[in-house]
Image (cartoon, one colour):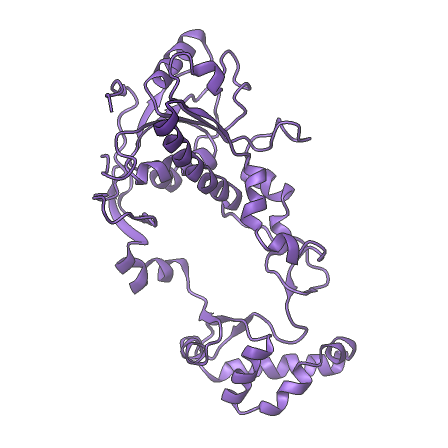
Length: 374
């Protein structure tokens, strides 16, 4: 089921077996583009199963073409001739038997926008490695900054996670490039080659962390020798707070009736050199948070203007009043899983009728229709 949006009328061919290509296709589909996903199971074994398929592939058609033989390659290239955008997760010249670069495909479709999403750029020592999330994340230092802070905790190594940070940053970066390329085509009449290495997208994704944390040790880190970021409260729930800065620490101490703590807690050199004193303050702060439940502390932080929130479960986050009212999460009828909650469409243009999100996927034998004149 296609939706009306600013990209309505554009046809996208997605040829990707990694999250980065699927996420980019989803972002374009959410804005109304007709996205046809092409799978070649023999050559691309990393096909995602389960709920990831239903979210990243929502609203797309699906075709299965075996590109390992000449006939399949010819069939695949025919689909690109009627497309506005083609997405793939490798260097354009790395596909055995055919080339997906703009220069190769432009003779049959000069308006085509080719989007290459390799793991690493040409010339990089790892240029032949795929855009695998774990590989790129390890190479770009994501694990070493979780969480960030000034004082490394002794004995702790990198903190690993399952979130596709690198793939998401690369897909978001590529989505803006696609729109810019389509705008350029409207003005100049020609398409072009876009290359967004997933590794390189992390330079943008890491942002100020590249400057603030570049010389710090890897592993779990804290911003204050005594004050932590997480505390367990009276109801056994946890709260995440940021009160190590004086502008936040002072109103907090005023609230709990201990303004006399400000001076010793801001004497960092003494806290670092005096282990007995430091441990005493750590215990004092831990006890304070046991006096109230986490949600009550959250409301107090809000009134004081201090960053702080109760640590919610994923279900609590998805079911929050804001989440549902804003459309950040939606409930759809998925053809495989039935009623299913998904992340909604965050970018919404209000002069377009985007319709409703759907996970409709055409059967694998369905053939995309020829491009219409626009």
